[in-house]
Image (cartoon, rainbow, N blue to C red; front, side, top):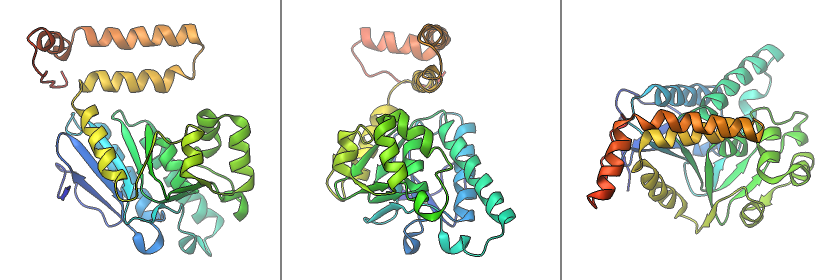
Length: 272
């Protein structure tokens, strides 16, 4: 089980927990269970600070698992009680913070696995989709409910969802605001695997440790190639992939990987 503690010099936060679970893996937990782990302004700032720190860290963390406190809800989206009575200016300022937080997560060079332990609605669902992939509890539900509130998804929902499941299925979720089950999310390609309730976080940590044991520079280059290559035509994307590949040829980890294979031992990757 993870042990709570500081992660280098990252510090502590009032709305999230960040814990080392060993093997260069960090567990980040949205920690406002009394309000279904909803995003308030402080959580937006806390997450922005965490993603920024992990972007700048020198391979201390090689993979991240993101989950929510408790067993019922991953994240219900924005805290509508905090938003009640906000002026237009206050609303826009808060959303700009959420936008920066979402962009920092998307651009994070290390992989992030969403361990969706319960319902993921609105911004919570958008955040899970911004991760590299996700595992979900069998009891989880997914919805983008913004259309029922007079707004729309604003941290990637209308872009990431169609890319994941196609335009027609995405339009159904976006325009109805109705939830879908974990089983349907899996069948449609949103979720990589369904876990029994209470097991999703540990399963995600096990997969994260497997990733963290691989060459960190290779992992980063693969993530970058997938992230940007899908925005290019195929020929340009192939050339982008080759350039990413070429950056790894002169690394110590490439030498170590081949040497370890020939010596029939586990490689020791240093991220150099």
